[in-house]
Amino acid sequence: MRITFILAAAALSGCAVHLKTDGVQNNIAVTQSEEWTLAKAQYAIDTDYIAPFKAGKVEQWLKIFDKDAVGLHNRTPAMQGKEGLGGFGSFVAQNLDVTAMSVKLTGHRQVGDLAYSWGTYRSSLIMRSSGLPMPGHSGEGKVLFVWKKQTDDSWKIAVDMGNDLPAPTGN
Image 1 (tube, rainbow, N blue to C red):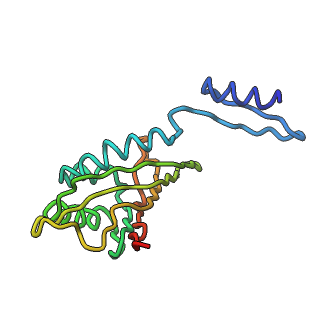
Image 2: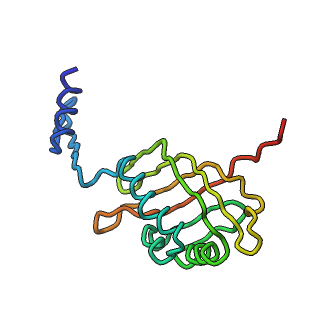
Image 3: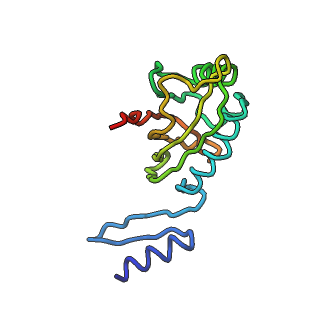
């Protein structure tokens, strides 16, 4: 109980904790600037991913990605690096209206300089050429983002993965 209280107090104050167990000293550094939380990830997705993507601002959207990022989306080959992701973003910006898009992150873990967040998405993609919904896109599914801490202490997406939930069968 006492160790739990000490760790909690240290975490809240943002200081380093030194534990001594069986003659071995362990340093646990708790620094606010190093933490990538669920709330920070959600904010980044809302402002730096969804907003520019919906607006067709591909160059701005690409800023949230690590230079070696990989995109793994429905029924498309893996998109590697900003060039591959940029091609996807440009296709969407030129051919589709993103009439709705939201991501709700429901879980998050950080391990050192990597973190991963998962949740669900909803979107509506309308083909400009026909005014019809994009074929094969159910409009909702699961997402996983792997984040990588950069040398300037910012966090960028290293892996962007999503897949549609199956379309309703009508049963």
